[in-house]
Amino acid sequence: MNASQPLSIVPGAQVPLSDLVALVAAQAARLAALDPRLDGILHRPSEIEAVLTRQLDQVPLVLLDQHGRVRGYAVPDVWELAEHSLLHAFLTPRNGIACSLTLPPANDPAAPMAVKTMLTSLSTDWHAAHNRTTGDLMRWPACDTAWLQPILERQGFMLDSICAFRPQSVPLPVQLSEAASIELREAVPADEEALVQLFVEELRVHERSVPCARVSPAAIAGFRQKLARLWQGGRFDEGAPLVLVAAREQQVVGMAECMLLRVELHEEPGWTPPGNYGCLDNVCVAPTARGLGIGAQLTRAALALFAVRSDLNGSLLWYSPDNRFAADFWTRRGFLPLWSTYQRIHPVFQKA
Image (cartoon, rainbow, N blue to C red; front, side, top):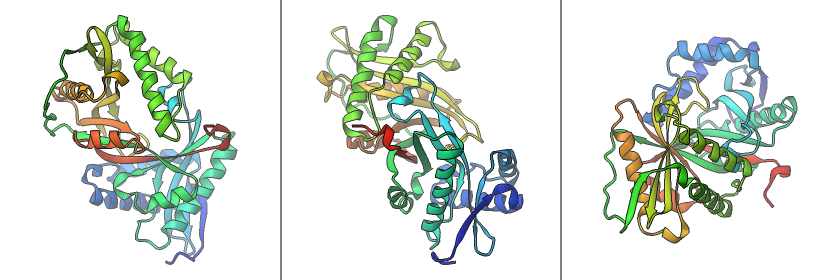
């Protein structure tokens, strides 16, 4: 097949389920060969069939070539953020997403046209059938983005964030030195205003360097709600955050928010192996205390909390590739890119 041959989109119900299962299984095997960390994600035909059967009511989009062969698959959906989600600082309120996205391999001459055709159909669904989205998201394994990113950029998408994974087996980073007179401890209610100030300052840093980031009142309210759950006695094992702070002369100058995350087999976007993870959020240091190694101390302390838990498969975090310091900082501590998110923001929601 060459790139000039026509492609078409049909509803999933018109295609034999066995053909769709074979397509998804082939992609899973191909991606696992590129990144062994992806092995085991929907690789059994029975698991794939169960997922695809559940999706038939959502009217999946199936990409066919001129011979009627299945070349791609996706289920258009909309991810609407909760009113006080922290993600309002980085995403728009209603985001088009593509569940179970399956595309031709990079070496297929028709791959660019397949992506464009699929995006055209997804966009029609996102913008019309779901009362218009305010932004759109595409997610793909980091090991396979070199060919895909230029195509997405031509469709108006920007590389937005990287989900990075650190195996539990990786030793803790060596603490080369400790900042003088810095105390590390768990946060207490009296720290709330200082923690919120750190959170807002971190958003301001992102707003200056990350195209999609913004200081959002909804995100700030969401952060306060998370802290309230902690102050009310919420347990770390039951979803409450554990916040570590760095204090200098009794003043909070840094924090690291830790969470526990459970990933199920069939959860979207589908590029994280199922299991239990430590999640590292909001590692930030006050402007007056940067360059002293406080962020490194907080990170090591957070990873030490995760390391003693035998039920964890590893640690996850998200960072912006536009923040060069963050990419280098996390890579040196064993966090390697797992999957990438691309975001297209509609003009009405563009930052001034």
